[in-house]
Image (cartoon, rainbow, N blue to C red; front, side, top):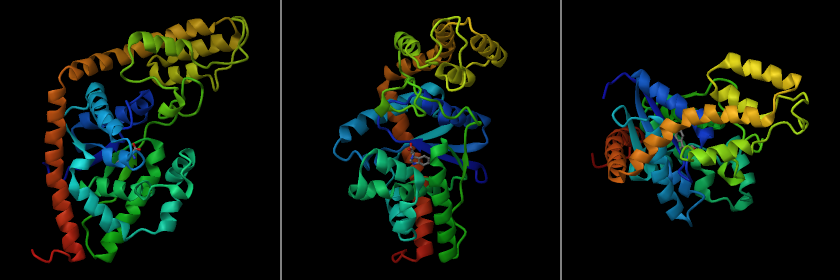
Amino acid sequence: MAENKHVILTGDRPTGKLHIGHYVGSLKNRVALQNTGKYDTYIMIADQQALTDNARDPEKIRRSLHEVALDYLAVGIDPKKSTILVQSQIPALSELTMHYLNLVTVSRLKRNPTVKTEIKQKKFGESVPAGFFIYPVSQAADITAFKADTVPVGDDQEPMLEQTREIVRTFNRIYDRDILVEPEGVFPPKGEGRIPGLDGNAKMSKSLGNCIYLSDDEDTIQKKVMSMYTDPTHIKVSDPGHVEGNTVFTYLDIFDPDKEHVAELKEQYQAGGLGDVKIKRYLNDVLQAELKPIRERREQYADNMDYVDQVLKEGSERANKVANQTLKEVRDAIGINYFG
Ligand code: TRP
Protein backbone atom coordinates (compact mmCIF):
# COMPACT_ATOMS: atom_id res chain seq x y z
CA MET A 1 0.00 0.00 0.00
CA ALA A 2 1.57 3.29 -1.08
CA GLU A 3 2.58 5.36 1.93
CA ASN A 4 1.80 8.94 1.02
CA LYS A 5 -1.19 8.37 -1.22
CA HIS A 6 -4.43 10.11 -0.31
CA VAL A 7 -6.87 7.83 1.43
CA ILE A 8 -10.63 7.58 0.90
CA LEU A 9 -12.97 6.05 3.44
CA THR A 10 -16.67 6.13 2.82
CA GLY A 11 -19.68 3.90 3.08
CA ASP A 12 -23.39 3.30 3.42
CA ARG A 13 -25.76 1.83 5.95
CA PRO A 14 -27.26 -1.37 4.57
CA THR A 15 -30.97 -1.00 5.32
CA GLY A 16 -32.20 -1.91 1.85
CA LYS A 17 -31.12 -1.69 -1.77
CA LEU A 18 -29.43 1.46 -3.02
CA HIS A 19 -31.41 3.83 -5.25
CA ILE A 20 -30.54 6.46 -7.82
CA GLY A 21 -30.43 9.05 -5.02
CA HIS A 22 -27.41 7.21 -3.61
CA TYR A 23 -26.04 6.96 -7.12
CA VAL A 24 -26.02 10.68 -7.87
CA GLY A 25 -25.38 11.65 -4.23
CA SER A 26 -22.19 9.68 -3.75
CA LEU A 27 -21.65 6.46 -5.73
CA LYS A 28 -20.79 8.29 -8.96
CA ASN A 29 -18.20 10.42 -7.16
CA ARG A 30 -16.66 7.37 -5.53
CA VAL A 31 -16.24 5.49 -8.79
CA ALA A 32 -14.71 8.57 -10.45
CA LEU A 33 -12.25 9.09 -7.57
CA GLN A 34 -11.38 5.39 -7.51
CA ASN A 35 -10.58 5.51 -11.21
CA THR A 36 -8.14 8.42 -10.89
CA GLY A 37 -5.75 5.95 -9.25
CA LYS A 38 -4.70 8.66 -6.80
CA TYR A 39 -6.30 7.16 -3.72
CA ASP A 40 -6.25 4.16 -1.49
CA THR A 41 -9.99 3.64 -1.43
CA TYR A 42 -11.91 1.92 1.37
CA ILE A 43 -15.65 1.50 0.99
CA MET A 44 -17.46 0.31 4.05
CA ILE A 45 -20.79 -1.42 4.36
CA ALA A 46 -21.76 0.07 7.72
CA ASP A 47 -23.83 -2.80 9.08
CA GLN A 48 -23.06 -1.95 12.68
CA GLN A 49 -24.30 1.59 12.17
CA ALA A 50 -27.42 0.14 10.53
CA LEU A 51 -27.99 -2.03 13.60
CA THR A 52 -28.08 1.01 15.89
CA ASP A 53 -31.75 1.47 15.03
CA ASN A 54 -32.46 -2.06 13.75
CA ALA A 55 -31.21 -4.22 16.62
CA ARG A 56 -34.45 -6.19 16.59
CA ASP A 57 -34.27 -6.94 12.89
CA PRO A 58 -30.72 -8.14 12.16
CA GLU A 59 -32.02 -10.30 9.31
CA LYS A 60 -32.91 -7.15 7.37
CA ILE A 61 -29.38 -5.84 7.78
CA ARG A 62 -27.80 -9.17 6.80
CA ARG A 63 -29.88 -9.29 3.64
CA SER A 64 -29.18 -5.66 2.82
CA LEU A 65 -25.45 -6.19 3.27
CA HIS A 66 -25.47 -8.39 0.18
CA GLU A 67 -27.77 -6.05 -1.74
CA VAL A 68 -25.43 -3.12 -1.11
CA ALA A 69 -22.38 -5.19 -2.06
CA LEU A 70 -24.11 -6.00 -5.38
CA ASP A 71 -25.02 -2.34 -5.90
CA TYR A 72 -21.38 -1.33 -5.33
CA LEU A 73 -20.02 -3.85 -7.80
CA ALA A 74 -22.76 -2.97 -10.30
CA VAL A 75 -21.94 0.77 -10.39
CA GLY A 76 -18.28 0.02 -10.99
CA ILE A 77 -16.59 -0.13 -7.62
CA ASP A 78 -13.78 -2.45 -8.52
CA PRO A 79 -12.36 -4.74 -5.82
CA LYS A 80 -9.01 -4.62 -7.62
CA LYS A 81 -8.87 -0.87 -7.09
CA SER A 82 -10.93 -0.41 -3.91
CA THR A 83 -11.21 -2.30 -0.66
CA ILE A 84 -14.83 -3.13 0.16
CA LEU A 85 -15.17 -3.96 3.85
CA VAL A 86 -17.83 -4.88 6.38
CA GLN A 87 -17.86 -2.63 9.45
CA SER A 88 -18.85 -5.29 11.99
CA GLN A 89 -15.87 -7.43 10.97
CA ILE A 90 -13.37 -4.77 12.05
CA PRO A 91 -13.26 -4.97 15.89
CA ALA A 92 -10.74 -2.11 16.18
CA LEU A 93 -13.51 0.29 15.15
CA SER A 94 -15.54 -0.49 18.28
CA GLU A 95 -12.58 0.13 20.56
CA LEU A 96 -11.68 3.38 18.81
CA THR A 97 -15.28 4.47 19.30
CA MET A 98 -14.98 3.87 23.05
CA HIS A 99 -11.82 5.98 23.28
CA TYR A 100 -13.34 8.82 21.24
CA LEU A 101 -16.55 8.85 23.27
CA ASN A 102 -14.49 10.20 26.18
CA LEU A 103 -13.63 13.25 24.07
CA VAL A 104 -17.20 14.18 23.11
CA THR A 105 -19.98 15.69 25.22
CA VAL A 106 -23.63 14.73 25.21
CA SER A 107 -24.58 18.34 24.44
CA ARG A 108 -22.32 18.32 21.38
CA LEU A 109 -23.95 15.12 20.13
CA LYS A 110 -27.40 16.61 20.67
CA ARG A 111 -26.50 19.47 18.33
CA ASN A 112 -25.67 17.25 15.32
CA PRO A 113 -28.31 18.43 12.80
CA THR A 114 -28.46 15.20 10.78
CA VAL A 115 -28.94 13.00 13.83
CA LYS A 116 -31.41 15.51 15.26
CA THR A 117 -33.52 15.26 12.10
CA GLU A 118 -33.34 11.48 12.10
CA ILE A 119 -34.39 11.27 15.76
CA LYS A 120 -37.41 13.40 14.88
CA GLN A 121 -38.27 11.41 11.74
CA LYS A 122 -38.02 8.13 13.62
CA LYS A 123 -40.00 9.59 16.54
CA PHE A 124 -37.40 8.38 19.06
CA GLY A 125 -37.48 11.32 21.47
CA GLU A 126 -35.62 10.48 24.69
CA SER A 127 -35.96 6.77 23.88
CA VAL A 128 -33.34 7.01 21.15
CA PRO A 129 -31.03 3.98 21.35
CA ALA A 130 -27.72 5.19 22.80
CA GLY A 131 -25.83 3.48 19.97
CA PHE A 132 -27.82 5.48 17.43
CA PHE A 133 -27.31 8.73 19.32
CA ILE A 134 -23.53 8.30 19.29
CA TYR A 135 -23.16 6.98 15.73
CA PRO A 136 -21.29 10.13 14.58
CA VAL A 137 -18.51 9.06 16.98
CA SER A 138 -18.42 5.56 15.53
CA GLN A 139 -18.28 7.19 12.11
CA ALA A 140 -15.25 9.19 13.29
CA ALA A 141 -13.67 5.85 14.21
CA ASP A 142 -14.42 4.51 10.71
CA ILE A 143 -12.77 7.48 9.04
CA THR A 144 -9.75 7.86 11.33
CA ALA A 145 -8.95 4.13 11.52
CA PHE A 146 -7.88 4.37 7.88
CA LYS A 147 -6.35 7.86 8.27
CA ALA A 148 -8.67 8.94 5.50
CA ASP A 149 -8.30 12.52 4.31
CA THR A 150 -11.07 12.28 1.69
CA VAL A 151 -14.67 11.24 2.29
CA PRO A 152 -17.00 11.25 -0.75
CA VAL A 153 -20.55 11.37 0.64
CA GLY A 154 -23.89 13.10 0.27
CA ASP A 155 -24.40 16.61 1.67
CA ASP A 156 -26.21 15.30 4.76
CA GLN A 157 -22.92 13.78 6.01
CA GLU A 158 -21.07 17.07 6.49
CA PRO A 159 -21.95 17.19 10.24
CA MET A 160 -20.25 13.79 10.66
CA LEU A 161 -17.09 15.16 9.08
CA GLU A 162 -17.16 18.24 11.31
CA GLN A 163 -17.55 15.98 14.34
CA THR A 164 -14.66 13.80 13.14
CA ARG A 165 -12.37 16.80 12.67
CA GLU A 166 -13.12 17.95 16.21
CA ILE A 167 -12.29 14.53 17.63
CA VAL A 168 -9.06 14.38 15.62
CA ARG A 169 -7.96 17.80 16.85
CA THR A 170 -8.88 17.04 20.46
CA PHE A 171 -7.14 13.68 20.38
CA ASN A 172 -3.93 14.94 18.80
CA ARG A 173 -3.83 17.90 21.21
CA ILE A 174 -4.56 16.00 24.45
CA TYR A 175 -2.14 13.19 23.71
CA ASP A 176 0.36 15.50 22.01
CA ARG A 177 0.66 13.33 18.90
CA ASP A 178 0.15 13.75 15.22
CA ILE A 179 -1.50 10.40 14.59
CA LEU A 180 -5.04 11.08 13.47
CA VAL A 181 -5.88 12.82 10.18
CA GLU A 182 -8.58 15.48 9.61
CA PRO A 183 -10.87 14.45 6.74
CA GLU A 184 -12.48 16.59 4.05
CA GLY A 185 -15.76 15.72 2.38
CA VAL A 186 -16.12 15.46 -1.39
CA PHE A 187 -19.64 16.41 -2.39
CA PRO A 188 -21.43 16.17 -5.75
CA PRO A 189 -21.56 19.22 -8.05
CA LYS A 190 -24.13 21.79 -6.95
CA GLY A 191 -27.63 20.95 -8.14
CA GLU A 192 -26.71 17.41 -9.12
CA GLY A 193 -26.30 15.71 -5.78
CA ARG A 194 -29.82 15.60 -4.47
CA ILE A 195 -32.55 14.00 -6.46
CA PRO A 196 -36.18 14.42 -5.44
CA GLY A 197 -38.51 11.45 -5.08
CA LEU A 198 -40.85 10.36 -7.87
CA ASP A 199 -43.64 12.15 -5.99
CA GLY A 200 -41.78 15.46 -5.97
CA ASN A 201 -40.79 15.13 -2.31
CA ALA A 202 -37.37 16.77 -1.74
CA LYS A 203 -35.88 13.46 -0.69
CA MET A 204 -35.83 10.07 -2.34
CA SER A 205 -36.19 7.56 0.46
CA LYS A 206 -37.30 4.02 0.97
CA SER A 207 -39.75 4.93 3.74
CA LEU A 208 -41.54 7.36 1.38
CA GLY A 209 -41.81 4.71 -1.37
CA ASN A 210 -40.67 7.20 -4.00
CA CYS A 211 -37.45 5.58 -5.26
CA ILE A 212 -36.01 4.13 -8.41
CA TYR A 213 -33.62 1.36 -7.36
CA LEU A 214 -30.43 0.46 -9.20
CA SER A 215 -31.83 -3.07 -9.36
CA ASP A 216 -35.26 -2.11 -10.83
CA ASP A 217 -36.05 -3.86 -14.10
CA GLU A 218 -36.94 -2.05 -17.32
CA ASP A 219 -40.72 -2.23 -16.88
CA THR A 220 -40.58 -1.07 -13.27
CA ILE A 221 -38.48 1.95 -14.22
CA GLN A 222 -40.89 2.82 -17.03
CA LYS A 223 -43.96 2.54 -14.77
CA LYS A 224 -42.28 4.70 -12.14
CA VAL A 225 -41.27 7.35 -14.66
CA MET A 226 -44.79 7.49 -16.12
CA SER A 227 -46.18 8.05 -12.61
CA MET A 228 -43.85 10.95 -11.82
CA TYR A 229 -44.92 14.27 -10.41
CA THR A 230 -44.74 17.08 -12.98
CA ASP A 231 -46.65 20.35 -12.97
CA PRO A 232 -50.20 20.22 -11.55
CA THR A 233 -51.19 23.32 -13.56
CA HIS A 234 -50.15 21.71 -16.86
CA ILE A 235 -53.41 20.01 -17.76
CA LYS A 236 -53.77 20.19 -21.53
CA VAL A 237 -50.77 19.62 -23.81
CA SER A 238 -51.22 23.16 -25.14
CA ASP A 239 -51.04 24.72 -21.64
CA PRO A 240 -47.80 26.50 -20.79
CA GLY A 241 -45.98 24.43 -18.15
CA HIS A 242 -43.53 25.06 -15.30
CA VAL A 243 -40.11 23.45 -15.25
CA GLU A 244 -39.06 24.70 -11.80
CA GLY A 245 -40.02 22.09 -9.22
CA ASN A 246 -41.06 19.76 -12.04
CA THR A 247 -39.49 16.44 -11.12
CA VAL A 248 -39.16 15.23 -14.71
CA PHE A 249 -37.01 18.23 -15.62
CA THR A 250 -34.98 17.95 -12.41
CA TYR A 251 -34.13 14.37 -13.38
CA LEU A 252 -33.27 15.42 -16.94
CA ASP A 253 -30.93 18.10 -15.57
CA ILE A 254 -29.14 15.42 -13.59
CA PHE A 255 -29.13 12.50 -16.01
CA ASP A 256 -29.26 13.81 -19.57
CA PRO A 257 -25.76 14.46 -20.91
CA ASP A 258 -27.31 16.51 -23.77
CA LYS A 259 -27.79 19.81 -21.90
CA GLU A 260 -28.70 21.75 -25.04
CA HIS A 261 -31.55 19.40 -25.81
CA VAL A 262 -32.84 19.72 -22.24
CA ALA A 263 -32.77 23.52 -22.63
CA GLU A 264 -34.84 23.23 -25.84
CA LEU A 265 -37.36 20.92 -24.20
CA LYS A 266 -37.74 23.31 -21.29
CA GLU A 267 -38.48 26.16 -23.68
CA GLN A 268 -41.10 24.14 -25.53
CA TYR A 269 -42.71 22.99 -22.29
CA GLN A 270 -42.90 26.53 -20.94
CA ALA A 271 -44.38 27.83 -24.19
CA GLY A 272 -47.02 25.09 -24.25
CA GLY A 273 -47.40 22.22 -26.70
CA LEU A 274 -45.14 19.65 -25.11
CA GLY A 275 -47.08 16.95 -23.27
CA ASP A 276 -46.15 15.18 -20.05
CA VAL A 277 -46.36 11.74 -21.64
CA LYS A 278 -43.89 12.71 -24.34
CA ILE A 279 -41.41 14.24 -21.94
CA LYS A 280 -41.69 11.26 -19.58
CA ARG A 281 -41.03 8.86 -22.46
CA TYR A 282 -37.91 10.82 -23.26
CA LEU A 283 -36.75 10.75 -19.61
CA ASN A 284 -37.44 7.02 -19.56
CA ASP A 285 -35.04 6.53 -22.51
CA VAL A 286 -32.36 8.60 -20.78
CA LEU A 287 -32.69 6.69 -17.51
CA GLN A 288 -32.83 3.27 -19.15
CA ALA A 289 -29.60 4.03 -21.02
CA GLU A 290 -27.82 4.88 -17.76
CA LEU A 291 -29.27 2.09 -15.63
CA LYS A 292 -29.23 -0.85 -18.05
CA PRO A 293 -25.50 -1.60 -17.88
CA ILE A 294 -25.62 -1.23 -14.08
CA ARG A 295 -28.53 -3.65 -13.79
CA GLU A 296 -26.90 -6.18 -16.12
CA ARG A 297 -23.65 -6.16 -14.16
CA ARG A 298 -25.67 -6.52 -10.96
CA GLU A 299 -27.43 -9.61 -12.32
CA GLN A 300 -24.11 -11.20 -13.27
CA TYR A 301 -22.71 -10.71 -9.78
CA ALA A 302 -25.96 -11.91 -8.19
CA ASP A 303 -25.42 -15.23 -9.98
CA ASN A 304 -22.09 -15.54 -8.25
CA MET A 305 -22.63 -14.75 -4.58
CA ASP A 306 -19.62 -16.85 -3.55
CA TYR A 307 -17.45 -14.36 -5.38
CA VAL A 308 -19.23 -11.45 -3.65
CA ASP A 309 -18.64 -13.04 -0.23
CA GLN A 310 -15.01 -13.56 -1.11
CA VAL A 311 -14.64 -9.86 -2.02
CA LEU A 312 -16.13 -8.84 1.35
CA LYS A 313 -13.97 -11.29 3.27
CA GLU A 314 -10.71 -10.29 1.62
CA GLY A 315 -11.57 -6.60 1.87
CA SER A 316 -12.34 -6.93 5.57
CA GLU A 317 -9.05 -8.76 6.14
CA ARG A 318 -7.09 -6.00 4.44
CA ALA A 319 -9.00 -3.38 6.42
CA ASN A 320 -8.33 -5.13 9.72
CA LYS A 321 -4.59 -4.82 9.21
CA VAL A 322 -4.81 -1.05 8.72
CA ALA A 323 -7.33 -0.43 11.52
CA ASN A 324 -5.36 -2.57 14.00
CA GLN A 325 -2.23 -0.54 13.30
CA THR A 326 -4.08 2.73 13.99
CA LEU A 327 -5.58 1.27 17.16
CA LYS A 328 -2.10 0.33 18.34
CA GLU A 329 -0.92 3.90 17.84
CA VAL A 330 -3.98 5.22 19.68
CA ARG A 331 -3.38 2.87 22.63
CA ASP A 332 0.27 3.94 22.72
CA ALA A 333 -0.76 7.59 22.73
CA ILE A 334 -3.21 7.13 25.61
CA GLY A 335 -0.64 5.00 27.41
CA ILE A 336 -2.71 1.85 27.86
CA ASN A 337 -0.25 -0.47 26.14
CA TYR A 338 0.63 -1.95 29.55
CA PHE A 339 1.96 -5.27 28.33
CA GLY A 340 3.82 -4.09 25.24
N1 TRP B 1 -23.58 7.48 7.80
C1 TRP B 1 -23.43 6.94 6.49
C2 TRP B 1 -24.86 6.74 5.96
O1 TRP B 1 -25.78 7.24 6.51
C3 TRP B 1 -22.70 5.62 6.46
C4 TRP B 1 -21.31 5.63 7.02
C5 TRP B 1 -20.86 4.93 8.09
C6 TRP B 1 -20.21 6.39 6.53
N2 TRP B 1 -19.56 5.17 8.31
C7 TRP B 1 -19.12 6.06 7.40
C8 TRP B 1 -20.01 7.30 5.50
C9 TRP B 1 -17.87 6.64 7.22
C10 TRP B 1 -18.77 7.87 5.34
C11 TRP B 1 -17.70 7.54 6.20
O2 TRP B 1 -25.08 6.09 4.97
